[in-house]
Image 1 (spheres, rainbow, N blue to C red):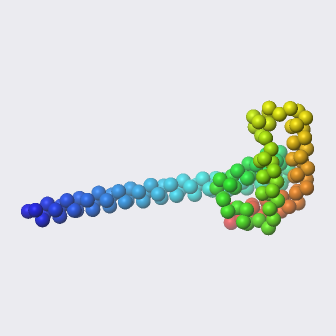
Image 2 (cartoon, rainbow, N blue to C red; image 1 turned 60 degrees about the horizontal axis):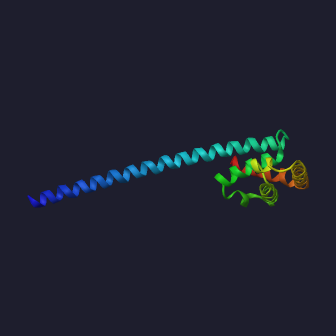
Image 3 (tube, one colour; image 1 turned 90 degrees about the horizontal axis):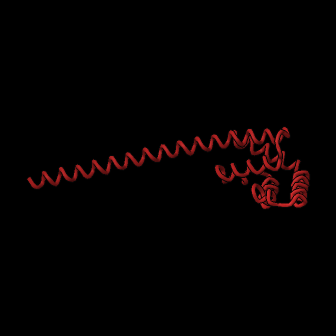
Length: 142
């Protein structure tokens, strides 16, 4: 009788652990699915932003920052797929400048000087940026 009770207790423990393992596996699969969907959404957004940038439909410095944030957040390996580092260089410089509320607090002269610096930076790297963004678009859509 004792052996039977121990066997039933052991079977119960195995069943509970099996259910727990199945539950964890299901949660991991759901999380992986959400992550894949989020990555796909980010990829679509990046492709749209790149098209807008290349067609000069948006403010280019703002567009580069949006592209950079999406790339850093969902594709940490993105910079390894570029022949040069213009996008990284330009976006780093733009990110170092105040934006949002901090930019709004600047006096007009400082804002104009920073706008000029952004335009000059974008002009200096324009051919490389277009080439790199085209490479990124091809890489993301693979």
